Image 1 (tube, helix red, strand yellow):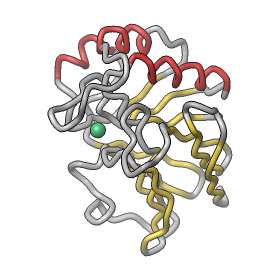
Image 2 (cartoon, rainbow, N blue to C red; image 1 turned 90 degrees about the vertical axis):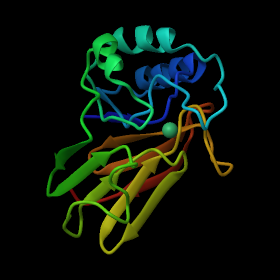
Image 3 (cartoon, helix red, strand yellow; image 1 turned 180 degrees about the vertical axis):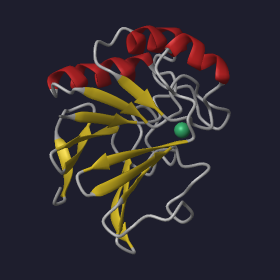
Length: 183
Ligand SMILES: [Mn+2]
């Protein structure tokens, strides 16, 4: 089963459309959104083709299951229009012998999160910068941002399938980073 992991769309219809083209091209079975989906937030400039209604229509029109966690720019009303779950502060996925703790990153951070075992992963968004590093045996993962990348990172998302995490440039569709673990 292949999962596309994306974060921080921030209402950009342009990058949401690109993402959904990649979801199709990757033949993904499910889409996991790490928050900050519809609004730009007061600290960001408007992203390209800012249109929360269009992003809503695109995401609700997807035929595969979508799951999300709540970002600091997400509002309660979003749950009503999006339908798929987005209000959870965190979620926990089991991948073989690993746990993947999923959160936006403003409440739990790579520095401060519930106890995980070595070999588990902490997956977050929020900082708009891709991350793939091990800290104290915990794998720290971030797909970067679809629409407002920071620190010269690419417009980016991730995939996960059979123990392999891939970071993919949203514009070119090319994978630029990979991490493999024993399932
Ligand atoms: Mn954000």
